[in-house]
Length: 77
Image (cartoon, rainbow, N blue to C red; front, side, top):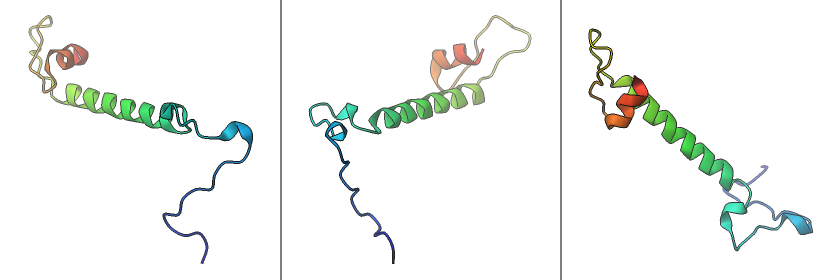
């Protein structure tokens, strides 16, 4: 039937490919997961900031209300 679903991965071969148990962030894929999480949070922040900005077209210097606060208003302007 092929590969079993949810089966554990095979251990990597070779002396240099062992998982570092002292520092779990150095194991393969942790940096990519952290980077993906940060990019997702930044994209959500930018979407909320740009989607909720309400600026007065006659007042170019003023900051409008924003769902993510003053930092979102500054980002959107």
